[in-house]
Length: 365
Image (tube, rainbow, N blue to C red; front, side):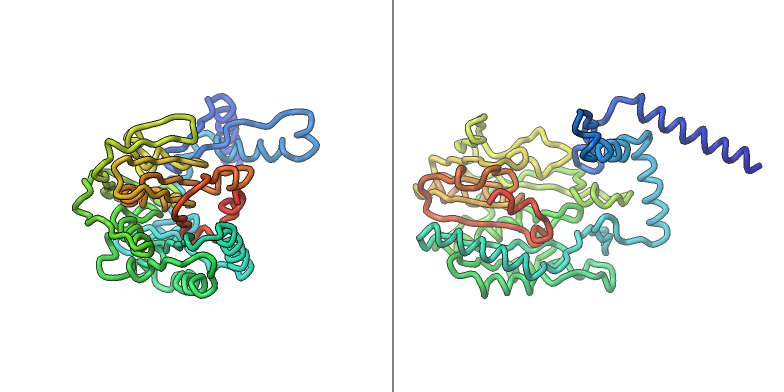
């Protein structure tokens, strides 16, 4: 009997290996919302520096025959056993998915403060602002599983506010955690919603003595069947889709978007994005994007240095800035200085709290 099982297992493994080699490599996973490893590095150096073996391992992990079926099966089994954490994402109350935040290390905070202070002093003007965007894991803490081990973003926010000097700190923690906080974050995505971004944008505008427009001035566009990045990342199955909405500024048709000289579009939204709906904002993230609104209330220029949280703030800032230069330090290879405009009136730096756990956001500075 054992021999039969061994033979069956051997046939199954062999079939999977043949299927892996024979099938056309998949380049993108809609479920995980990421680019898959679909090439093996093979040259005269790769055999000696370890890159060949490493690329083979990554290729097999991403291209394994019936890979998604296996992942779905194992995640279903784990959910049945009561698992509430998948790939650093908690499955919380009311179907909320919340990405875990670990407290930033002291050296990470010290490095960030030094970076901000040096940059603020270089500007040599009282025009630089920094905003830490809290994530749903902290603001929506009541949705977390009981005793879930997470860090304290409020403490990080307070420390940055106390230590930053050359760069003024814009605190949005209280605004986002007040009554109505459920509308500020998606249930299946790690970003804040359009309404959450609106509140954050207004907090910045208040800091520079500008009165923002009421939300009713922006046309809301709603789309159904949205499962965000955390639904893909967590691997949990049977995630209930939610509604995705974004807001059009009053002069959206007059706004032009230039992708660092590569192409120019009218309006800020890429409506072709269906799976990753948050990528409707500008089609994703780029090193530099120039947004121009000839009908803005001022001739001012805003330099916005940000991660993806900043994308959804832009529609609420365009009525007040003729030019917005948007930089993403994860893509500014060679340093920010080569991407900076010659002149600007205000600078806003926006990063979400979990960015402190990642290494790639500082490489472009």
